[in-house]
Length: 211
Ligand code: ADP
Image 1 (tube, rainbow, N blue to C red):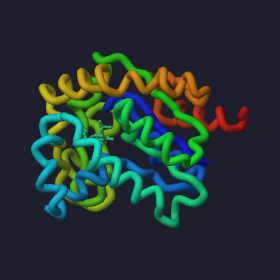
Image 2 (cartoon, rainbow, N blue to C red):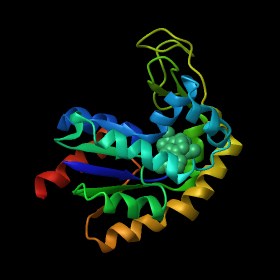
Image 3 (tube, helix red, strand yellow):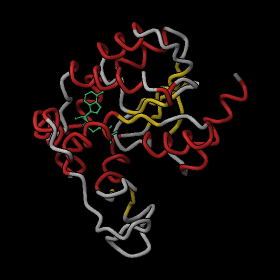
């Protein structure tokens, strides 16, 4: 099963993608994680994109498209994958279609900006294992410490409030047009992002039982 998850930052794409990846046994491909990996390893790409990502802007298409193309060609993707964060503008969506991978469904998680701003400003993650917590909705057992590996949690530079507003503006401007692009291809399903993560996962799983 080849899936794309769409939706604004903070709507829960990453959380859903991780869960669905377990349920369906297919890899979760987050372009954000791949790009952050380059920054952590200080690769040539990492050095080029660090400032762009910190300010919440989109990384150049040529870089992201190449990374996504390489990742979906890996052997663990033969049975399917879940794309999270790609495509993020109309051009990337067109290139994805040209790759002719046979995307089965695009799921768009909808959520209002005010809710997102509240969610994101409380989001903290573990730099070592990638676990994500929220001060209000999903706190770690010990404040500021990762439950899984005991590392100190950090707030992503691009989760800071001023950057969140910028990322939402970019989402509305650049990413939202993709929704009608996939709707016209008859593969779009919209899901309400308000509700517990478990309920939303159940809603998505049900879609595939009905397919
Ligand atoms: P979120 O889903 O919370 O917005 P991501 O981890 O998906 O965060 O993305 C973080 C950042 O990585 C984006 O703000 C952007 O700078 C960069 N990025 C990720 N995917 C893409 C993409 N497909 N095109 C351009 N930039 C991207």
